[in-house]
Amino acid sequence: MKKYFTLILLLICFSCFNGYGQEEIKNMQSNFWKQVQIGGGIGLSFNNNFFSGSLSPSGVYRFNERFATGVGLSVSYNSQKYVYESYVFGTSIIGLFNVIPQLQISAEFEQLFINRNFEDTIIVTGCNTANCDESYWYPGLYLGAGFSSGPVTIGVRLDVLYDDYKSIYGSAYNPFVRVYF
Image 1 (cartoon, rainbow, N blue to C red):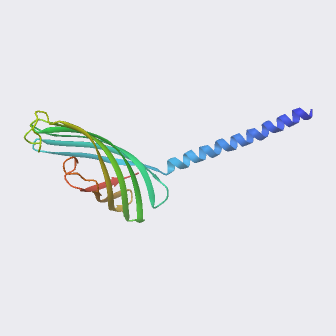
Image 2 (cartoon, rainbow, N blue to C red; image 1 turned 90 degrees about the horizontal axis):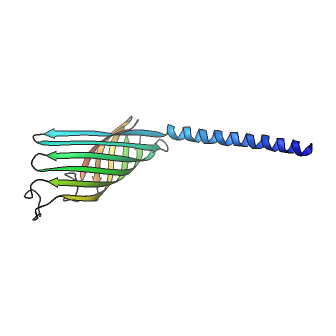
Image 3 (tube, rainbow, N blue to C red; image 1 turned 60 degrees about the vertical axis):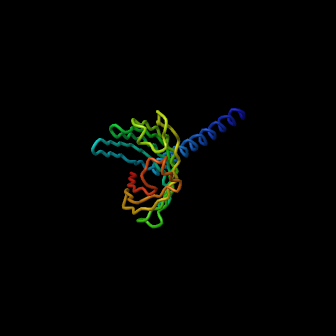
């Protein structure tokens, strides 16, 4: 009888601990998703014989009111009739810090795979072969600052690794609009 009583008591204790442990895991998971913010950007640009479109979703985990970090993806397509077309795929890691609620500074590392197909070799500087198409990886390290108002931040970022010949951007300085919900 004593053995059965001890066995039942142990089963009840382990059941209670197991239920408590499951509840803690459930609370941790629900608290995690409450701190996650989703956002991103959509871009369209077109004029005479030129088109550019991009989609870049991202998500950040807000540790507190001042600091957040996250990841992002990006895809874009560009073409200029009779000149070139390009496909760009990439990922990024970002850190955001609000010095005060209205001032946000950021650091972002972006790794892009760029595929450019040129239709005319005369356009490409330094290309003296029949095929000037290129595919390569391009890193970007951005330091930025912006004005925040609610979920929207507007500012400018500087690519400290900027390369005139390989970057898909026309300048080391890039304006940005960030939205996270």
